[in-house]
Length: 232
Image (cartoon, rainbow, N blue to C red):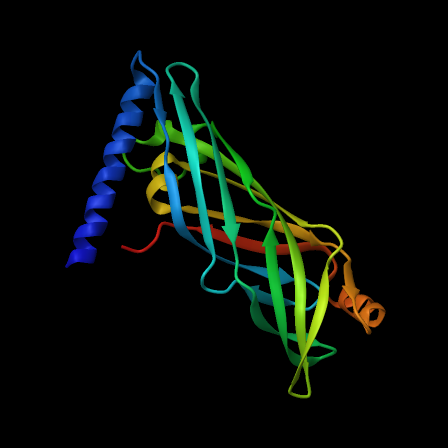
């Protein structure tokens, strides 16, 4: 009962915020909103094109940050979002040389991320909440993420590795949604990224470089990323 009541309270508060925004857009006074994002769960997946495999991000990923949204009558909506993304190290089974291999992976974003918010045509938000079409915006949050391989299990033996991309992979996160979705529902991004070449250190570094480059590196790797409010 408490959780249900909490969700209703959050939704009511969010609707109230959006109502105030809508009024501000059509009134003579400007409005500034400063939302906070505390431990918003991050989920998603990256499909490695060369392997034809989807790698799902683990549980425990979070986004923490703040935003500033300015609504100016006659000028629309502008704003910024800044925050830190965290994804814990995890293990995924990859088909390395056609053999299912438990592989330790890491996704290390360059923090903080800096995003922008700006008005777009109401038609860009196909399913707006009633009365919120005028708050349709584009949310753009470019992320740069260094991808790492921390271990490979061969014949049941886990072998630590020190491998990571020579530069961060770029995730140009962009989506159109209403302000209500940003503050209460969350954001969903899709796109494609290039996995850069991999550099490994240690005794078998050169051999691993060549193997991982052959298996992982290349363009047009689809991804999806979700940043949603914590469950009440």
